[in-house]
Amino acid sequence: MLKKIYLILSIAILSGTTTIGQPLQLSNNSTISLLTCGAGNEYYLSFGHSAIRVCDTSQNIDFVFNYGVFDFNTPNLYLKFALGNLDYMLDVQSYNNFILSYQYEGRWVAEQKLNLTFEERNKLFNLLRENYKKENRYYKYDFFRDNCATRARDIIEKSLNRDFYINNGVNTDNTYRNLINQTFREIIYPYTNERLMWWQFGVDALLGMRCDRPVSVAECMFIPFYLQEHLNTINLCESSTLILDETKTDNPKSISPIVVFWILCFITCILTYISSTKKIKIKWFDIPLFSLVGIIGLVVAMMWAFSSHWCVKENLNILWANPIFLLLIFCPKRANKYIIYTLLTCLFLALLNIIIDIQHYNSAVLPIVISLIIRLSHLLYNERRIKRAA
Image 1 (cartoon, rainbow, N blue to C red):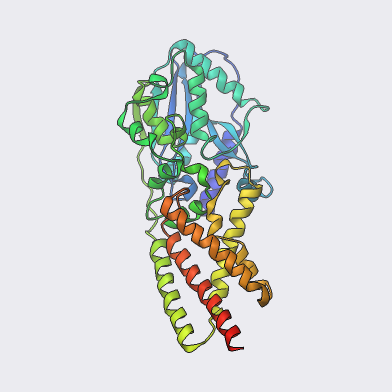
Image 2: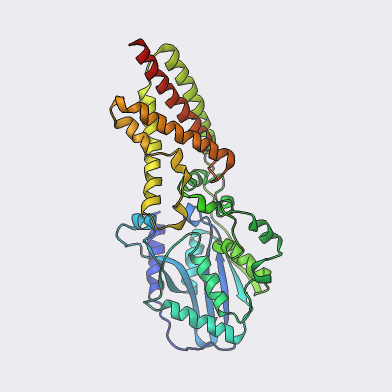
């Protein structure tokens, strides 16, 4: 793993030294291509990648303009990414170095040569050069609205002397007809398969209801593969070539969180029955359960309140992943009744949301909600029983 990191960093350092000097204009022999890269094994690599290749062999030009680069040495890197404050940038790499990194990772790379006029090629090249200026190259990454694919989409569209969309954005192609009625969340699901189901659960917990509205043709191109398909659909692709075959080995399949949490629900029922009939407390079970849910809720609340990511706002997961669960553990007993009533109200609202689907919940949420309702109801029942006995 370390060897891989060193290699990628070395390539990044080498590519960072690439400079774009003269000429200001491409020759008639030049070509500009969209490079689409296959998924990697990590979650953040599972949606592929887009970059733009500019090749003019008569002038010794073969550069890749890559919008998906950030500085590994950024202080508080992960915190800045979570809060939406991490600067991504347009980097320029030699084509050979770009391909080398994907070859090492075993990911496929396809090239689509764009069917551009001489004027459009030069316009696109100069727009890329303008973007690469130090004052223009940095941007705030947004997975759904501003990433490597949307940047490539926008700059290609800007360079054209024609409409980038068909029928003013209403595309008759079957792929897009199916996508029109899908949401952002539904579009990303196929890329989080059985090997990434826990990642899918975690991401679903962080995404808010904004991700559950239907997307437009333009918006679906935040996925590089849909941008690739769109170029074929509008006949902007002159030719398409698979440069690298996929050679990576897939991650092993993991047990589904749905299975795990239904097992948890079954265990909760059994333990609650034993606790009720034997009149014993099972704090050893409640404390880790409530702590885990409360911590998830705390993360959801903090992302909603402090992150600038558009997709984590208005998140109804706060109804079941509720930071108030932490109060249930640390507050004095006399306050527990009011906390339990509040939490039960939120959980029943979460059940209502599962039924009417205002915001789509991950399928593993239902057994969690049922488990929490069972435990809270039992605690409330015990409190009343103790009060009656007194």
